[in-house]
Image: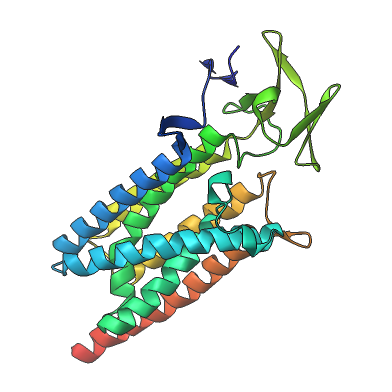
Length: 291
């Protein structure tokens, strides 16, 4: 058997490397490639949506440049803070360590400042960008697959993913038990004479969840009832999916005993519900006043 095996789907991947290729001795990782492709596709989708709604595409191009940079800064800082690492390690980004909620918060802060400078509607702006953000997230999760990280606990469900133990960083095998990052135990299973841990492929769950959410938002974008509706749908949909998926993860960032991403997800859902109700009522009242 190969390095990665899906036993119930009969998919066997003989070998997979984190490094895509090297240029002048510098390794280019698949993780970075997927993030770059996701960012490019996301920006193109946002620009297309801006064109469809009669907005200035150049304005969104300017925002994308700043949001990508500050999003990466936010993702790295979030990871270091809640992982208990020093912020002095910020530039060791090639060693890994980005958290998507940090990226979203970085992009959100950028958007708040940007719309105030441009004097435009915040929710109309985010409605235009939201499908691009989802697209970036869909691609980005596949970088975790190549890194063999951000997976879940033990499972034997239909989508169970078996990782050969000698290819997983931070895994120590003792007899028939494997200890991941010093605190999560997995039973060791054997396929074809090789030892594996069998995990939830949470990268796949989140990618598929985001694809479904993107399709729903895409179908609703021409029929929305109020500005900000797509943003509300994203926050509730992504928050709900992430809350569930984080409950399966084995490498959660925590505050005490509580997973940070689950707390942030719950906040996203509640805040979006409250904001959605307020915006819907306001739009309804505006329609009544206009009659």
